[in-house]
Image (cartoon, rainbow, N blue to C red; front, side, top):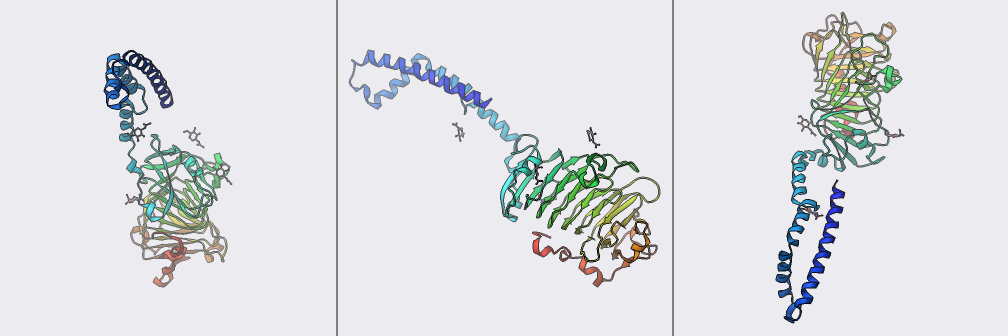
Length: 399
Ligand SMILES: *[C@@H]1O[C@H](CO)[C@@H](O)[C@H](O)[C@H]1NC(C)=O
Ligand SMILES: *[C@@H]1O[C@H](CO)[C@@H](O)[C@H](O)[C@H]1NC(C)=O
Ligand SMILES: *[C@@H]1O[C@H](CO)[C@@H](O)[C@H](O)[C@H]1NC(C)=O
Ligand SMILES: *[C@@H]1O[C@H](CO)[C@@H](O)[C@H](O)[C@H]1NC(C)=O
């Protein structure tokens, strides 16, 4: 559209100039006998103006410029409407200074950003970068399955708020060839950070159905942090698979094993929202996958809130050395009195580490807990209550 306009403009301009030259040369030739001062600029300019006015080229010229010029009032008007809809300040971010960001990529659905899909922006992130790339998402729901593969290091994704910026897809274990591939967003690169964005798996709850697991986010990369993010699904919402991770002020929703994997992660100030349905036990908040004594993996929940509906276990022993600790956390009545489950495999009772320290609320009563629950002392709980648990001092920009 714009290119066509520009071509027309130059075409008309060329014709107008040719016309003007012909008329002018005619005028000059016929009047050159009148004065020898014709060539002086002082005389030339008013004469030129007069000629243009007399011939009506003036009107033609301004008509052309107004309607076909690249910088015409018409295009300026369009441009200003464009600017009003696209607020350039939207892309200002405090993270640029904080993380010494070297490249900012913008994504939105209205044509105001550089990209209209998150995956396209991710593909444009420099490979194996030592400096930070920031992708800013405008508010809205991006319906796409996104993979951040191993080479996309030092990437930050920033949304506007977890309540209004989301990446959503609806694969299930059945549709994708296994739970591990059902993620909406899969992060395989180290040093990934997300702010104020939601990860959703929108496939419907399918109690007891085949291949019903449906992951919203799978995080495999080491040293990842999530601030103010949302995670939505039912069974297996958050696949906290491998590496050291930090989740701060996040909202995590699901039914069965909705935080699972074999990562070493600290969840601080998060809301855990159980949404299982049915009679009896409706799910478990965690299913930690530690399978070896030697690994240092585990999930630690600090100053969190457990809410929702149904009755859930705090965790069950997916791995025989499953390690999960809750400290200073509010537990509503959705937490089942027995608290934990050994995957119906009693030998695991001696191997798992399921700890609780100074929790509150109706679900925090330790009286009817399973016998292998660890009632931690301050000293025993301390290693799980600090970012040192994930070596955060080495790599976290902000705790
Ligand atoms: C159009 O106008 C803007 C500012 O008004 C200017 O920066 C730009 O260079 C102009 N473009 C052309 C092709 O004249
Ligand atoms: C990385 O991701 C892009 C986009 O999904 C894909 O085209 C490419 O094949 C991936 N590379 C590897 C090594 O997985
Ligand atoms: C995902 O949603 C689309 C559109 O709503 C639907 O056609 C598709 O079957 C769904 N996929 C799965 C695996 O449920
Ligand atoms: C994320 O959202 C919180 C809460 O609205 C806000 O205080 C914070 O500044 C946001 N952070 C970024 C990087 O946008």
